[in-house]
Length: 204
Image (cartoon, rainbow, N blue to C red; front, side, top):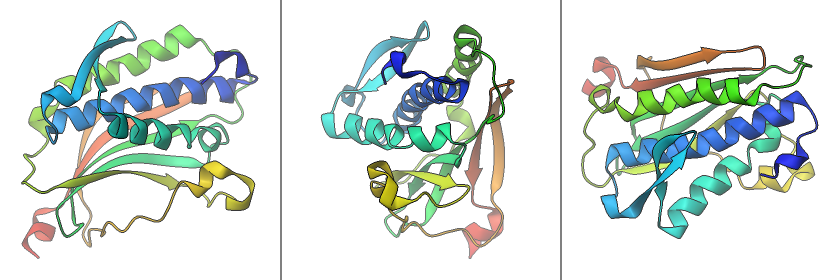
């Protein structure tokens, strides 16, 4: 993500957000303990100690998934980005959801320091949020899922071709939602919350 490519507030905001999402998603995966601690290494980001995936395939999956969303985030087409943990039957057990909105009418210069400071607080909150989530059983899988406001034109972007419909099953009942953190600025709004199946859903 070359910073010299920033040509508009939306491009700059999307760049900062994408960098943040890559770190935040890695933090979520680390938090859930699906991999041994040696699969991650400590790095500094926004003056915080964060986790970075050491395994090339894990790191590349997270990086390529977020990078391929960059253009669609700029255009305001991405509504939510979720990290979904499912059992062996592809039934979701837990979802970490980043609800995002890049202001398409914002025309001023983006205050990068202010925006990064606001996003930094999400990483701090994530690092102490383990008690909010459930312990996952053995054999779980996970995936990054993006929810678009409208379907992107696949024939106009190679990035869109990287995204395929998910085969993860949907809950039939409204989930239990636990807010984790939210922020709102003139250029960007972000909400992070945790979704778990309702008690009725778990008993089905």
